[in-house]
Amino acid sequence: MDFEPTADRLLPDLDIRTEMVLLARTLWHEGYDDHLAGHITVNQGDGTLLCNPWLLTWEEFRPQDVIRIDLEGDLVDGDWPVPPGIPLHLELHRARPDVQVAVHHHPRWGTVWADLGRLPGRYDQSSVLGGGTAALVDEYGGAVNDPSTAAKAIAAMGDAELAVLAHHGVFVLGGSIRAAHQRCVAFEQRCRSAWLTEVGGGGEELPPAVIGFFERGDGEGFIGFWEAAARRELRADPSLLAG
Image (cartoon, rainbow, N blue to C red; front, side, top):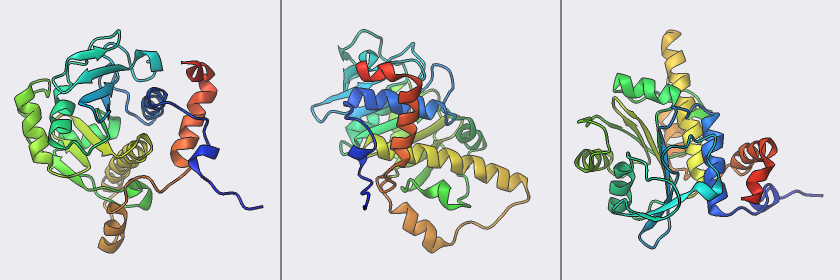
């Protein structure tokens, strides 16, 4: 009997708020764990964004804690404060209304490359599985809680889907929660593998044709990757399905 690995056979039905929480928790275990830092926004298509709140870490917030904000950063719905660093997301969604999901954090290995002010090399296929092009945003003029600084960063990012924000962290975009997860995991693996490769004496990047093939990916093709990570979080905390 053939098994068709469709997403709906691998996870229970999830609403978008639960998906956001699962994304945050899965990424926390991938190194996106700089204390209270980090923002996830999901474009609602009506001038509002769903967002994780300020004051809760990514490993602890729950679906009922998700807040909704407008593109001015004002709270529309929710019981928690708006994160102070949200101008980066506001500027992004204003400039690129087609972007559905945006993730910013200071992951362990991505931040190393942010500190170096360099893009990591692409040495293995797992490091590029999320697809998308990466940009170095070397426009640091202060924290991105300042709207003008955030706007400069978004302008410097251009139409890239991944960015190393020099002296700061990373910014990852996707068309869905699954795509954002795949890209975040792959990019952190790229950052880690590139560092270890350089420490080990260096290596050859993937052939340009292979890099080009993977860059064209939208992060949606690896059915099962996101679902396996989400199932792990649901086993650890089944109450998430209850809200």
